Image (tube, rainbow, N blue to C red; front, side, top):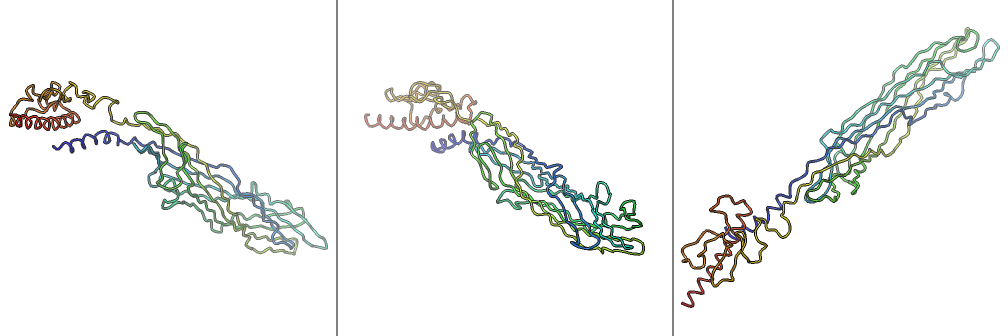
Length: 378
């Protein structure tokens, strides 16, 4: 083997040992909003004028949550942090309800009298209909990832919510009878897009970005990963009331009509609590400073454990006890075993054998030089 090739192999050994990648550290990042009311609802009196008017007052509320299951990686020996996640390892969910109270306002003229009344229709606690959906996604929805956002939505078709009959026991107008019927529908959606993954060492803003870390070989390394995402939720309600009122032979009919009510977009940032991540960093695979890989001499030319070469004797070569004692006087055709190669013992490890090859190459060069000089002086 050529000395240069052996040297190249020897130099590659510590680097190969250092390329061991620490095991990834799994993390679960979660966020939830529960029992909150993002929108208040008040339709006002509709129609704006007339003997019979209806009004809805209430709120939209419930909960939303998101989960990201992924892993933090430590690239080694580069000492850089990055994150990834399996396909579909994230979930986004919403469960929102619309709770409304119905009110009537009456301005009626009957039998020469004017009756005025305003109050709630006693359907306790009002009517409630819900928008709910759950969707899976691949974390962490950062720029550069496809797709980089997830949306869940629910669409409710027009459905009769209640049909309620009332009499003078509810409305203190003599002989009054009537009924109110309400149908409702609507649409609600929730969208989320990743903003950043945060480490104490720095932030990941784009999919695949790396953050420098301060990991050291052979030492445990601890950090933490947090997550921020921008979310937007919005919707619309479509209410359809109808009211019929009778007082004696007279009838007032508020025909069914559509009452749309938009729920304007709300945008906010969700901050997922940071979770710890830990790594066992491998050693760098190199020996202590000043100690050759085979435990021999430090290379000062003195007698060592099989690896040193001493050219100070007259024409002789001393391989530190590992070679032929007559190495300086043999014939050109008789090549002794290379000093320190471990061939005779059979137990040399890879790096020791390579060092032996390098020492043997140097020994042969010196031997040729000595023999050539003796020929000139003969």
